[in-house]
Image (cartoon, rainbow, N blue to C red; front, side, top):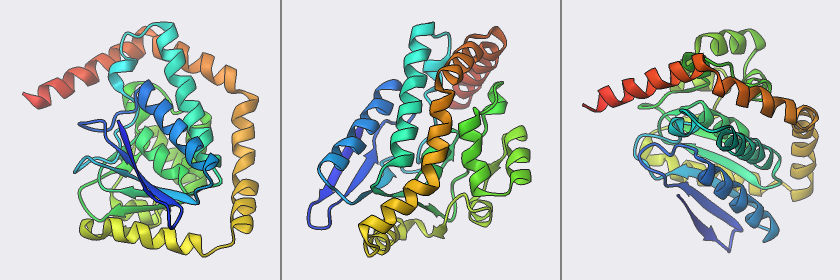
Length: 255
């Protein structure tokens, strides 16, 4: 589900999502990503580029099939794994660059917003938080990622209508940092990584921690309530009905 290509000389790695067709974040993949990040930290790597093996999709978000008619235990394990991955990625001392080669809705947008730097291809993709279309609101800590990226009013409006941003809109609203032609995505990601590597480790890490730790601490303060709310929401009959309709629409598109 994930491959890691290490550059021991630079102390960096490429972490490549490989869960076809759309890199859906199931429980196994969420746990795997958290484990990889912790492993790179323990081995004193400096950073990694998060990218996708899919030709048109960076990450389509949480695996919808795992959200449909789940047991309470299954959805609890999934959401805990998602909380853990976000805390791990958002607060890692590693330099993180997202190379966004295509669509990045919902959880894919969360991954992108949680990295230090996001580079997106100029065409062929959309990015944003579109949870309301499936009948549930994005949790507070997910909403704050978008609020922190763009103005509160724009974030609120986008969250309410499940707005998905074009690449140009995404860079204008600071959801991603730069746009590139697809053929230059990897080289530009490496270039961005090199710029971060030139910054002293201590100053980079302390600045990142001071800016981000309060948001992680905030989630920790209500983490169990967040879990209970989300599990209850996903098990609600109306939410399940919306998810079922969405899965059916996906099946029809494939016909």
